[in-house]
Image (cartoon, rainbow, N blue to C red; front, top):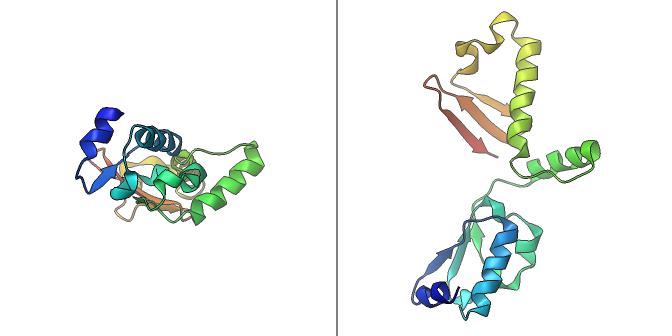
Length: 145
C-alpha cells in the first residue's frame, strides 16, 4: 500500500473498483500508509452502495455510479421476508430472468421461447429494477435501474 499511496502524488482522482467491504479496507490501508485521500476525488462503482462505505470517514465525498436504490430496497425487503437473509445486489438479475421465464410460460403460448419472442427489440422490464433484452447475435443489453 505504501507504493500506491506514494504513487498518488499529484493525481486528481483515485478509482477503487471493488465491493463495499473491500473498499473500506483499501481506503483504511491507504490512509495508514500515508495517503491523503481527501486530496483526491475518490471514484467507485455501484457496489459502493453499502452502509459500511457511507460510514467510512476516509470515503466521504467519494462518487460512484449506481441506479436509484429504491427498487432494490423494495426487492430486498421481499427477499428478507421470504428467505430470512440479505440478497446480494446482483440477485435481481437472476430473479428477473426467472420471473421472465414464468411470465412467458403463462402468457406467450407455444412461441414463448422462440427467438423472435426472446429477442424482441423492446426487451423486458421487471419491477422497475432492471431492463434487459436479448439480441439475435447471442449478446444481451442490460441496464440496472
